[in-house]
Every structure is written in C-alpha cells, then in structure tokens.
Length: 232
Image 1 (cartoon, one colour):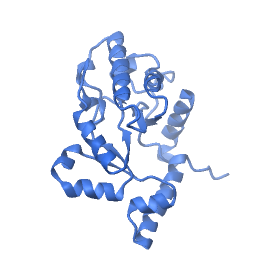
Image 2 (cartoon, helix red, strand yellow):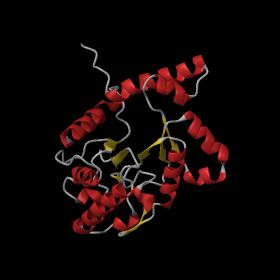
Image 3 (cartoon, one colour):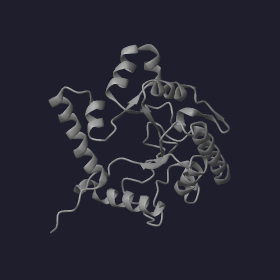
Image 4 (cartoon, one colour):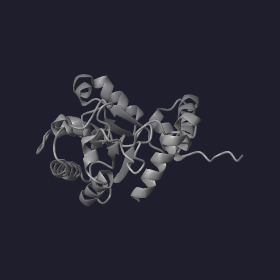
C-alpha cells in the first residue's frame, strides 16, 4: 500500500525539529533560527508572571517571535458576564508583544468542550436557551475580535468541538456537551462573526489528538480534516 502523505501538522513538526537543531548547531536563539528558515516560533505566556518576573518576559522576547496567552485571552476568562468582557490581562500581554516586536495569536474564542476542558464555556451559559446562547456567542466573538482588530494576527476561533469518538447520531459532528451545541452550525457562525469584524486576521479551528495518521489518531484526524474542509 502507498504510504500516506503527511498532514500539514506533521510537516510543521519536522520543520520545528530542524529549527531546534539549527539553533543548537549555530549558537542562535530559537527566534533567530526560525527567522533564518522564514518561520515564526511561538509560546504561551502568563501575563501575571510577566508583571512580576522581568527575566520571564525578557527570555520570551529573546527566544520567540509569536505569543498567545496561557488562559487570559480565552472566553472562559474574559467573558465575566453575558454582556461584560474583561480584556485587561490580555491587553497587558499585547503590550508586551508590541514591545518585543512579537506577533500575537488570540487564544480560542469559543470552547466546544464543556466537561473535559481546563477552559470550558462560561458557566453562566449552562441552562440557557439556544437564542440566549447564540446572542451571547455573536456578541462576544464580534466584540472581542473588534477590540483587537489590527493588533492580533490570528485567532483560534473554536477549540475542541470534535469528539474523540463519533457521536451515535452520525449527523451530529460536534461534541454535544457544550452549550454552543444547541446552536445549529455554531462553528461556522462563529467564524462568520469573527470575519465580519476583522477581514485580515487568519482564522483557525484548533483541537487535539488528530496530529498524525497513526492508528490511534486516524479516525479523529479524518473527522477534523473533513469538518474543517466543510467550513471553507
């Protein structure tokens, strides 16, 4: 049988290893080694540590060209109420990125995983109607993307919406435990809302457990790949 071609994520991992080896061989920072190959190398940072540890911020600026927040830019953290959003910590990271000439990637706007995520959808959505959840979703996505328009180069719009195992009802492609699952085609609607407020930012779907064509990831890899393809 023919050997399957590597997915984009596998190719990226090969390039990443070449950056590490190049940095070690030529005594370069990771950032310098990546720039030599026309790539960026990124890191999740904690804005709270940036405020208290100068070495933490200096090392990040020296070694990395792209950053995102550990949790402070995610909906679970910034959406403090149905109509109240707190971007203070995320703004702080943005200021550091600007100072260090780093691009910034927006952590996911919506989590499609309610029970098994460390950053699930906001608790106040539990028990809400489809109309109420949809109203919050569109308002939050549009408000957040508009707040950072021209300042954040890319967004993970939705995270972990695809279940590890297929649903019994195969017409249901997404996890059913998330409040957002009440909304028909919510992933597509979230992308449309984000694009409406920023025509230039790159928009991504993010997930885990689909990075390769290995047997234990093959089924989910195909489902994520096909799901993302249908969004185009």
